[in-house]
Length: 582
Image (tube, rainbow, N blue to C red; front, side, top):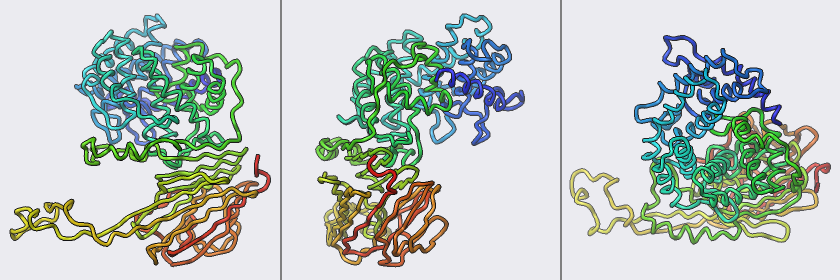
């Protein structure tokens, strides 16, 4: 794998050089243009520091064809000068997306930049000194923003701690340790089963893991590795057979998107060696096979391998990973107890520039049998997802006009051969505000609605809409039984979301728009390559082609089934026999 990373890094070097701005009149002189925007940024993903990591790793590595290449060194110097010019006076950077003068995004850059700086310092190559001087100055200028800056999201805290750890190591800065301890005093936002607040298996769980590994070492806080271990153990059960990570219930932008295991390579590889853990070694090998390149600035695998040469060596005895299992995550987590304490926190459910992530710790069930992989989910628009060979049933979602939009399942109960999920929504009406509670403006010619004390209105005519989904395994696949009684005449719509790569070969389908169909009856077969899934249960209980506030995913194929309450409806999902049970 090391050799493959060296080769892919050399390719990345060449590609980055082609995007470097060499026009001295340009505001981006020395920076590398982001292909998506045509702008040179200073950020840890599509920004110039990522290309600098590729270039620096090549210059420092005798196995690279660019080892101590003076032309490349000159380009690196230009890039370092651009990064320094782009830094704000307060020491922060603006990454080019929604965050400006962003402490956490600056921290991401610090983590990658500091590791590259440490690698280049080791070279003891005099021509590198101007680059090193510029890089060290950039890092030094970040100290004020790291000692005072805040964050938006839970994982940002651990990125800031890692960055503070690197600044402590480079500058002997005790204030950095003290600031990190302020963040760490908030405690770890992880369930006993290893799930981080954001439930972001595709992106931010891996970020929290590697950042806490750095923080544990740099701040001498070995206890920070324990939550990382919990998450890495959990992730063994959250990867489909293809290596695609389960993102069906993420609380961040990876929701329902395709992500592989590669961001977990460094956490698994580092802890596999420190803990002598064969399962972690097996997961590291699996993740390593998916590394197409060394990675972005903050998590560049090759830079870390050059700093820790033992990471270049193959693992001695990695464990075989499970291919058959059934696992409930957070099944025993006392989530409702935590939620009941939320009022005492005093924020009244409001948080600026972020979200509260009240779905933290919601139950998730994972089932795998060979090449069949199933996820059952609570607190998300989708409650069921399945992979079967090349077939991808990305989501099964229920939406209604009761509380327009998707109906999330809030409860999960295990059955002998499956699970019972239930979701409940309430909607009512509100009477007039008592006269003694009315504001002064209510007696004036203008009485704005937003000045009335709506929290004091009495609730009337509250209605409850409850849906149950009984999901059971069968010898040939699965069944989904949906049941709802009241209120009557609620237009409801079930959506089956399939990967765009397959095709429908049977079923009574009416085209709503491109890749979106109403399914009124007949057996619906979806085929991808030699694999298929066949469904029964189509119905046309009403003619609505969509539900308000229930936006369907892009770049997928959607099949919609319309039902009306009360309903007791069973869908059968039959899988192609070559893949059934192993």
